[in-house]
Image (cartoon, rainbow, N blue to C red; front, side, top):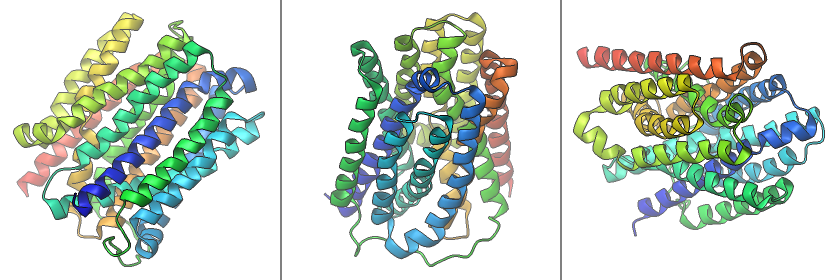
Amino acid sequence: MSIYNKAFIAICFNGFGLAFIWGITVTNIPWLFDRVGIKETDLGIWFTIFAILQLFFSQLSGRVIVPIIGTTKTLMLGQLSFAIFPYIFITANNVQTFFLSSIPLSIAAGLIFPTLASTTNFIENNTKRIYQTYQQASFSFGFIISGICASLFFYLNLYPPHIFVGLIFFSLLIIILTYIFGLSSTNDYYDKLEKFKIPEKKVLFFGLNLAIFMGTVGIMLEWTPLWLKRDLNATLYVSSLSILFWGAGEFIGRIFGEKIVNLYGVKFAAGYFGLAGCLIFFIAVLSGNIYIILFTVFLFALSTANFYPVVLMQGLKYTTESISVTAANITTIAFSGFLIGPAIVGFSAETFGLTFNVIALCFIWAFNAVLFIYFINQLNKN
């Protein structure tokens, strides 16, 4: 097995681990709401703190940490911070401790996400293959397994703090696997240290495009279980299935992502296909039928699965800056949307309700897809 294939296995372990732990976490948010008395606005503040800190650590990762210690050690450091998060989150007895749990999570996200993107691009350049879609598939597979496990945990009525202690050891296992499979110090790549400066306009656009997209994904993942339970009166078992259906749709779409891009091009893979899935999901939301909604969550995820990897590839393709800095810039902007989007819902849900926000999500996603298609057309003209 080549060093690049081994390194990609380490990347997939990290993607899977992040998604699995996060999937288990969001399905337990309703339990934490009821135990601590957290409100939607509190969750909105939590995501805001998370977003601000993640912006800082993403930039620190791409500009300083990766150039000094390399990608493998950066991933291990991020996973170590991620191992601390579950315990603080699930054992919170008050809102202040709940807010505190956002700190290790933001450090982990800032270190891991841009490093995964830049390392995957490094592997692509050395193998002449498209790997971003498969890398994103590891996240989707993590959500699939987390959905299955969450439903099983609810069925067995397991005590959530016990589950989250297990997640700590799982994260430590990912650190060991990263050390075994990741790029060694001699094969790792080290970009030069970079001072902060405003990213290129094209990078800013692709980052903004992904921020809007990740905002909608964040809403789907973090608010759908609560929306199904509170507005549509679904049981915790049924509402947790939304994570499973979303992960399954993304996983299948991304496994075939390389073929879809090669056969139909980036505009179809990231634009037209998703517009069709968004329309179907919108109609299902209006129906109010829980099971139809769950099925169309799968279709929506399937059709939008390759938006993130395709847009990220375009950003790394058109940049004139170093790959680690560009990856840090794009993922920093992108994941700020992943955090800010759900935070906005947290503030608006108490006034307009969660159903209103889910409907608004459909219009926002459709606008973003059209924006991407337009920008790619403009780039092709030049």
